Image (cartoon, rainbow, N blue to C red):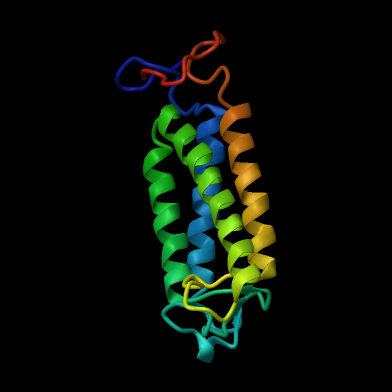
Length: 163
């Protein structure tokens, strides 16, 4: 079987955790771009830089702003960079999942206090909150469940692989 240029793992084969991180990063990039496309983003004329005043909704459901779309793009780019290594893919998925759980809590707090308040800078709505909860748990699960044997030739791996 062919090896990569450094004589490491088989060329063309990526551990599942890296593939998952690449797919998740790609989805974030796609969502970030779609947030700037009129028609896919309804009420596009009401798209604002940030805050609860942005009336644009991705797919007519998720409240978005320029800042919100930019965060998706940056998150996707960070995921592509981190997914180059198994340890980076794990960090992207697990830490990214934790960030999205924190965003879910942020959304619940904002909703409980005042959705129209100045602290709602991203903006978030109920659909965003549920999506953030699912993303948080999903990314953490992918990061933890797909990496137990990644990059080790079948042996259990240490928390930080050494490719």
